[in-house]
Length: 426
Ligand SMILES: Cc1cc2nc3c(=O)[nH]c(=O)nc-3n(C[C@H](O)[C@H](O)[C@H](O)COP(=O)(O)OP(=O)(O)OC[C@H]3O[C@@H](n4cnc5c(N)ncnc54)[C@H](O)[C@@H]3O)c2cc1C
Image 1 (cartoon, helix red, strand yellow):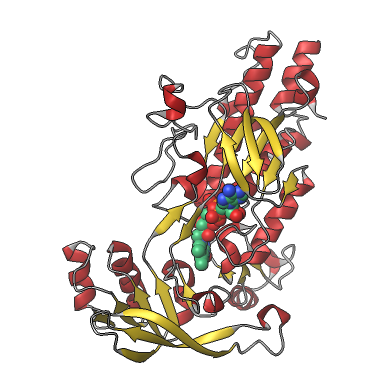
Image 2 (cartoon, helix red, strand yellow):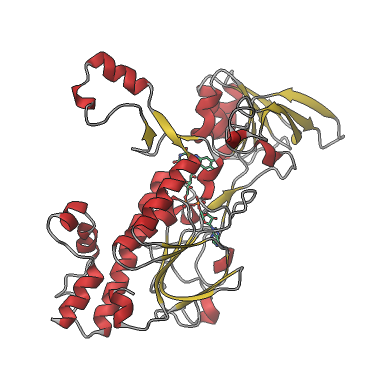
């Protein structure tokens, strides 16, 4: 029981967060520290699908670009006193955390501050029946919750080739990846295939080629969706060979070098060959490759919000600068038509971003959505208690400032909902 639920109806949650990628865990950490006792519905434990608890990073090995998420043998308290040579040695040994380790750390941190976790898949969200009052969330396992605020952090899933062998090599350095900027560095000096004919395939191919990787660009037709300039750039790059009228229909590999010694890799294989097929006559050939980068687009996980929340043409959720969801044109049979945003529904991370698609940007958006949700609940609570939000300084800025650790530890700053309740009781 917390300040808010004491003050209002007990059976309605303050905040439900759907999704346990960097966005969801960050939103959970912030709303938990705000004393809102968030419920995080995390997705399933099914490791073979895009519904995996932990999100997209569960499928990758080392994360090298999440600041601070590193392993190092150095005692950080003595770091500044090491001589130059020792510092240079230590810097060489810095290693990024694996995706699963980073996500487990995020989970522990969110739970430490009071996040309640549920490993389930959400099958239905009712935005329409009580907008601005509460929202209903139903899960695959038959549970039903009501919540004042909802943070949508359901992410996106890279489209795959849809061939059976793909799962076997996906992630953990097995050879199939959907992100060249994330995994490309491990293929320096090697040979890879990039699948796709759009701008992102051209970009990934050029990015990899510029790392000194030999790239085979595989496209099933001889016309490209990519812009002319991007195709020309790929055609001119000496490290890129373009294969038109080819699809990858199968993959071959050999046991993972760590399979015998490391349980994590026990049944895994690493890629050695892609089998190409010419769709015009069905003829096949083997191509020796160490990696395959699939660049045929992403699908945002937004099916739950069809006819409720506004999406762009590709299905990504739209939001305003306060991370608030926008109602769709005919939302709820035009019931929400006049609203500029849906009160209490916030959208963050890859589910609303097809441009940056990084763990750090997703986490940043999760933080912003959480602060906005905290503000929404504090204002609602103040309103219910007949208090003046302005006099209480309920603003995004003051809430954000109240999250600084030293304000909490040294200045005795309290989460906003507690301040509202204290003011009401004074
Ligand atoms: C192979 C790969 C490697 C990558 N490497 C890097 C990297 O090195 N550095 C980097 O910065 N970025 C990397 N990225 C991108 C990064 O993973 C994403 O930008 C980031 O994970 C987005 O976070 P998110 O929380 O918005 O979404 P996601 O990580 O997609 O998480 C979405 C969550 O929502 C859950 N979910 C979806 N629908 C439901 C539902 N109906 N009910 C319950 N739960 C649901 C999913 O199970 C998942 O837990 C990589 C991506 C991939 C695919």
